[in-house]
Picture 1 (cartoon, rainbow, N blue to C red):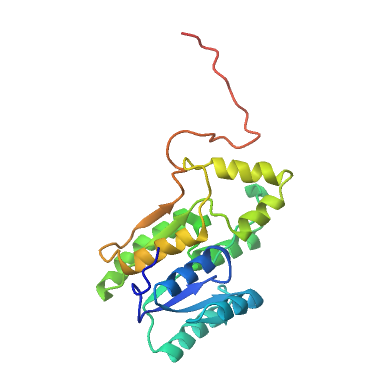
Picture 2: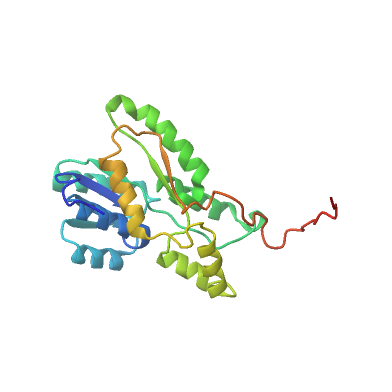
Length: 235
């Protein structure tokens, strides 16, 4: 998908780049010729990817710690002297739970990681933040866009499925949620990130849905356990 030169000479930072979607984004930018600095809390996984991919530099980083973020940027500028693109990918998906079961601390942590990391779980807030930043930063020639992934087959998705009573059924349901009949791949999200960074030069404030068309057409909308009323009216 990448041409090998689309991002030549560019320096890109990717947060949460150690595995899954983040690793797919790192690979896509490397394939496009960029120098990539990526961070993750999983130092072992990050170091392994750094060794695998030339043109990358790994920095251990906790997105909820301001000092870690400052180090990430200062190290990037120190090593490469510039920063052309930031992909705020870091985030996590908590186990399924009802709102009344969610603690204030857990919700605050979710917001800290997923909003600072611009992850897809908090889509509404991320989209609003994207549009606001796009307006604010346009005066500096900075474009701000976001990607909202749907079901992407990652280690996190696999782990979440394994935690359910019937993992195979959970995976099947996730697969059938898309009209395309499959889940997305991290490489496809990576290709979209490269497109927004290198080719979509007149796009800012854009939300790019990567859902396989899951929001189109009809499907089961009620959650399991919701009381269902079946109409008895006949023509």
